Structure formats: structure tokens, C-alpha cells
Length: 158
View 1 (tube, rainbow, N blue to C red):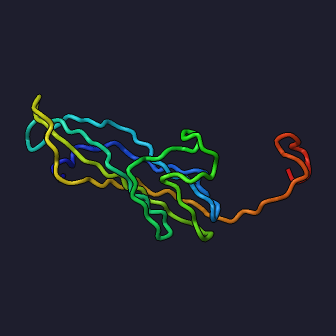
View 2: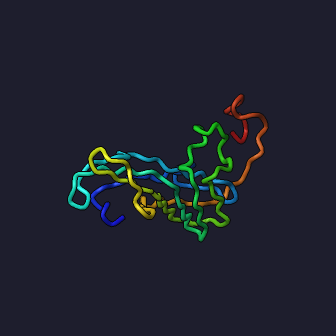
View 3: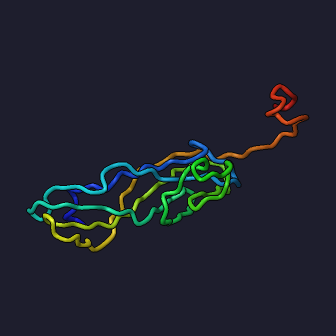
């Protein structure tokens, strides 16, 4: 893997919803977006070569002592056709109010080839830290309203 230092895997970016905050006791949804080339050409061990990367998983450190390693990048609730605050493979519930720093690590396998030769696997997995996502978790209270706010937005409690 150290010979691949001049080749960079796609950049993973941590995303969350709601954006930057969470409600204690309700799932906050985390997901990764990936941008960049999956295959690159350059010099490897002094020879012209191509390297391609494949994501093998993601590790989320939720900042409260909990971690999760998952095989999927996850997606927004809308993309998954789920209502807000639904449980997902990458969601997390915070037990206490506070400020947290969520870290994402993407894991990649790599293959290389010289010229038109067959692809050969590179031993090992390349972990790539993808930055930190700050969030604030707080409590929320529900309010009883006289009518449905979508039909009567000016009603008491809306």
C-alpha cells in the first residue's frame, strides 16, 4: 500500500441529516458521498501503471464513544424514500445533549496493472480519514396544537 502514495482513492465526504444537529433519542442519519477517479494512471515502482480503487466499507466514529463499521455509504432519507428520523444502516442515536465531532474513515482495496496486463490485487486495505463533522445534539419537546398545522398554519401552536 505504501507504494500507492502517489495514487489517491476517491474522496469521501461525511454528510448528515438533520444538517449539523441531532435530537437526543432520535436517529441522526449519516452518509458518505464519494467523488474522484476510481482508476488512475501514473508511475508505480518506477514503471507506467494504472491503479484502481474499490471501497470496501466505512467506519463512523460518532464522537460519543460509539463506532460503526458498515459496508455501505448510506444515503439521505429522501433518496432512501424514508421519513425523517428513520433508522438507517448508518444512523446513530445520541443519549445525551452536547457537542460532538463525527469522524468518517473510508476503506479501500486496490489493484494495479502495468500496460495492458491483468489487474493484480494489492495486499491490505487502505484506510483514508475523511475529516470531521461537528454536530450539536439537544432535546426537543412536542407541542399539542388545536388543528393540523399543514392545513391551518396560523392555528394555535403552529
